[in-house]
Amino acid sequence: MGTSVAQWLDERTGAGTVWQALFKRKIPRGVNFLYTFGAATMFIFMLQAVTGIILAMYYSATPETAYDSIMFFTTQVGYGSIVRGLHHWGASSMVVLVALHALVVFALGAYKYPRELTWVVGILLLGIVVGFSFTGYLLPWDEKAYWATTVGTNMAGTVPFAGNFLLLVLRGGSELGAVSLTRFYAYHTVLLPSLALMLIVVHLYLVVKHGVSVPPWLWERKPKLEAKRVEA
Ligand code: HEM
Image (cartoon, rainbow, N blue to C red; front, side, top):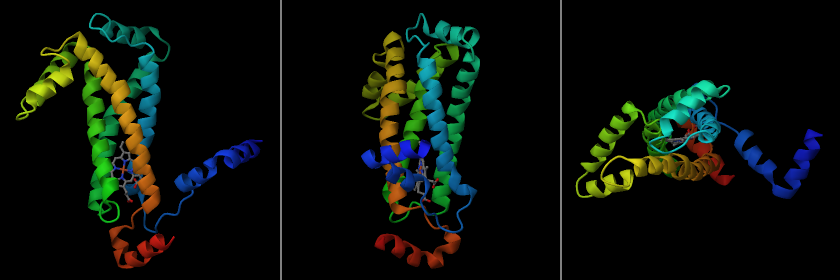
C-alpha cells in the first residue's frame, strides 16, 4: 500500500528522485560524526518550526497581552510548558550546532572549491540563526527581554553612518514600544523563516550537487574522487 502510493506520487511528481538525491546519495569514505552537525541543525530547525507554530497560536503581540499570553500558554495549556521549553532550548542548541557545523566545515577545508557558495549561503544562514535568537528574545515582553533588546538595538544604532537608520528599521520608531514588538514578531515569524527556508533549499541543493567533501586525511586521493563527480 505504502509503496504503491509512493510509486503513484513518484510517477506524477518525480519526488522519488529528490528523495534519492537527499537520502540515498553516496558519501566518501572516512566521513564520521563531525559531518552530522549540519543535519542536526536541520533537525532542530524543523523542531523550532513545529513548536513555533504552536506557540504562535496562543501568542498575542501587544505590550499589554504578550507576557500574559505566554504565561497562559505555559501554565494553562496542556503540554504548553514542554512546547515552550523545547522552543527555548531548541533556540540555544541551534546556535551551538550551527556554530559547530561551521567550525567543522572550516577545519576540514570543506569550504574550498567547488563549495565556496555553499559556505557563503551558510554564512547568511548563520546570520539568520542569530537573528532568530535576537528577535525571539523580545517576544515574552518581560523586563529582561525589554532591556536586553534596548541594549541590542542601541548597539545597532552605533554603526557608523547607517546607525540611525538601522535603529529605526529595527524598532519601528525611536523608542522600544508596541510597534517594535509587532515588528520583531513579524521578523521572527515571517521574514526570517521565509529567508531561512529559501536559503536552506539552496544550501541543500549545493550539498547534493557537489556531494559531501572528502576528509583532509584522504586528500591524496581527492583529485580522483572529485574528477569522478565532475564526470557524473
Ligand atoms: C540553518 C543553518 C544550516 C543548516 C540547516 C545546514 C545544513 C547542512 C547540511 C544538512 C549539510 C550536509 C551534511 C554536512 O556536511 O553536515 C551541510 C553542509 C555544508 N554546510 Fe551547512 N547548514 C547550515 C549552516 C551552515 C553554515 C553557518 C555554514 C558555514 C558558514 C555552512 C556551510 C556548509 C558547507 C561548506 C557544507 C558542505 C560540507 C561538506 O561537503 O563536507 N552551513 N549543511
